[in-house]
Image (tube, rainbow over all chains, first blue to last red; front, top):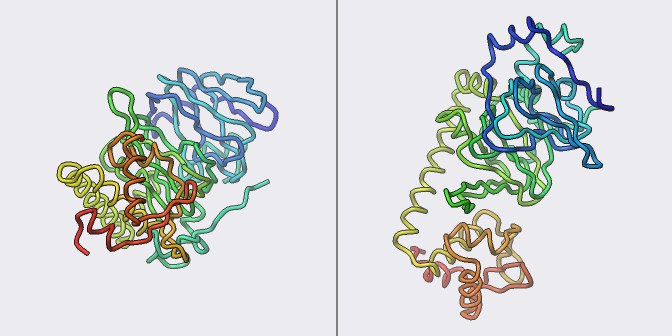
Length: 113
Length: 235
C-alpha cells in the first residue's frame, strides 16, 4: 500500500464478476486520470499495460494487473493523495460512482457506499 | 476527510445548466451521483481518442475544447464556460472522446458518469430537451464557423471572434466592454485559423481604428457598432 492510498487486489472470481458487466477500456493516449487533490471520477482496475502513481517528489509507483485504485476516494468523495497516470495501450476497467454505489461486490472489498 | 462538495441545488450555474427544470429532490439525487473537482490552468479533463465514461458540467471558469490535426497542430473548436456541458456528444456518437478538454484558468467542474446520465435522459424529458437544445446550439455554431471560414477574411473573423467573446464574457466598464477571459494570442489565432503574428497585426489594426482598446493582455471593445460592420454582420 502506498501511504495515503488504498489499493485493492481482485481475486479471479471478483474480476470475472466485474468483467460480466463492465467493458474493458483501452487508452490510446497517455493521460492523467486523477490529479493530486482531486476526487476520482471513478475507480480504476488495471487489466494490462501501465498505470502508475506519481508522488509529490516525482517518484512513480506502478500498479499491477487486477488492482483497483481510487475506490475509497470516489465513494467517500475524498481527495486523492497523489497523481494517477495511464499510459498508451493500457487496458482498464472503469468503475464509475453509480456502479460502485449499486454493486454488492464493492461491499465485500470492505467499503460501504 | 471529504472534500467540500458543490450541491446541484446551490450551484452557481443554476439557471444555465441542463438540469435546471428538475425538482429539488431530483437535483439532490444528481448531487449524490456526481463528482465535483477544481481543475487548475492547463490540467486536462479528457483527451481526444480516450474512452468516454461521462459528461462534465462547468460550474465556473473556462475550458478549451480542442482537436488535433494529423500533423500534430491543436485547434480550438470552442470555449466552454459556466453552465456548459462538455463530453456529451461523444456519449451518443462514440466510445471515445472526439476532442480534448483543458482548463484555461482555474475551473470548477462536475462529472456525471455515463450510466447515470443515460438513465436520467431516459426518465427526465427536461434533461433530454435541454441536451438536444445544447446539441442544436453547438451544431449551429459549428455551421456558422464553417461558413465564416469560407466567406470571411481573417480580419472579419477576428472582429467576429471579439464580438462573440463580448457576448459570452463581456463586462461593461467605463472604458468599454471588457472581455473577461484569459486567452493567449496563440489560442485566439487557433480559433480563427490564422498565425499568431497575423492575429497580432490585425488586432493592432482594429485598435488603430478605435474599435478596441488594449491594456496589456486585457481587451476592451469601445465601438461595438463599428466592429459589427467590420465583421460583416447585421446590426
